[in-house]
Length: 177
Image (cartoon, rainbow, N blue to C red; front, top):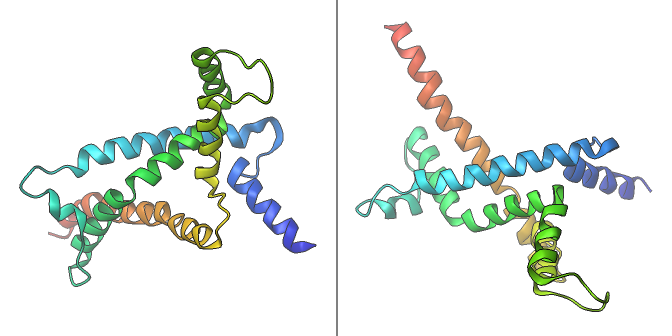
């Protein structure tokens, strides 16, 4: 049915960016995951504003002017969702480039003797897939995972808004004068 076909196309978009042949889309997804991992790490460094004002980065006010609201919401969402965004980014790297992770598990825990044997590293890799895709038995957790999946889009939009205000608007101001 068309509904199943739509879900498969959506999964193809998420996994391979609709570039299925030669795994090119998966490779680009891995590159994007590496970049998001770097964004998370640099975001943590930029988020820290010192001991006196660190609490300000935890909340935002709906009544603020647009630039302040945009900055504060980006900062607060980045703080509260850092761990899950970082997990999604790192697991995205694993899903795009699984061989180095599997080779590390084989190197650290040794090769598998039987298929029934499960090493701690295999458990971590299995949980990486579960955490990335939100494969839970509870529909409530699945719903929460879908809603949290919107956070990267909000972070992208607020980040573009901050860039726009700091770069584009400031360049235009001297021209007006």
